[in-house]
Image (cartoon, rainbow, N blue to C red; front, side, top):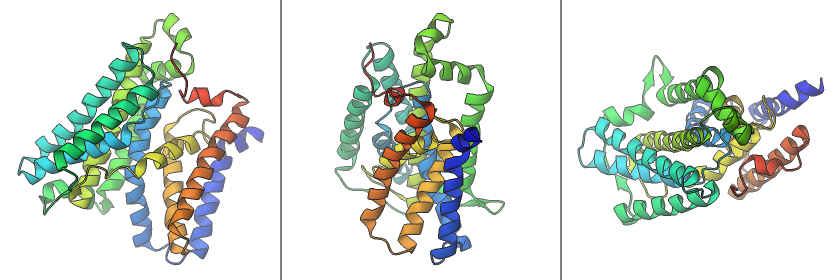
Amino acid sequence: MPGLIERYGTVAAGLALIAAFAAFAPNFAALGNIINVLKDTSFLAIMALGFTLALTVAELDLSIAEVASLAAVVVGWLVQSKVSPALAIGAALATAAAIGVVNGFCVTVLRVPSLIVTLGTAAVARGLAFMATQGVAFVGRWPTGFTGLARGATLGIPNLVLWLAGVTAASWALITWTRTGAHMTATGEAEEAARLAGIATARMKRLGLLLSSLGAGITAVLLAANLSSAAPNMAGDYFLYAIAAVLLGMTMFAPGRPNVAGTVFAALVLKVLGNGLVLLGAAYYVQDIVLGAIMIGSVAVSTVVTNTPAFANTLAFRARA
């Protein structure tokens, strides 16, 4: 029984929260509102999944929001310039991937802590985004071939939900079914032991940081397609929520460890919480207060569950030797 509580206690609390809002928040259970919550969850969850993969190899990526904003600016500028949407999307993803490669190189070759590296690349990405736009968003009537990526539906299912399902499935398959995923997990849990066992730990860390940036790039493309606009700070609001989703996800399914299922469910719970509070008429700042409490509580719960006082170190808030 204690094991079940540790693994599924937060899940049960999340389901109870959803049930409470369905019962007491006006129109929460309406189909249109549920679809909107799922769509909004997709942006957060995809970005958070990237962060999860970086954390799996015990590295932090604090550049995800700024990378997403820069990638959105790239795709928005190119689409507005009448460039093929496919090329524009490729350029945005390449931009995000390039930053991920830089992060990985600095961490594994230059031996700079990921906390410092990603803060630095975040500042660079933010500066480039503002330089490209001069602080003014790209807005226009963009091709439906591009906007349909986020606004359209396939067989009645919103494309955003399908994107989330695809990225989730790919992330889960990578970590659960592949040797690479096993090596990533081993690298994050015991780097020196993994290295002595013959695992290319530096390569795994570079891969985790690359995938984190690619998650931000995918989020950027979908955000720009959904809004038909691209601004230099458009993904900024997702940063703390993405971290909160990962931390909250670490209290369920595999307590104390970053995991795909936990991250996605936690992202849904956070979006349900925000939506429900709005429908109940709560002031906007209440969400920030609750978010902060969730982040602190998630780490506290995971520390107790794993009985590891130095749990914060597992999140890579530590200097590399």
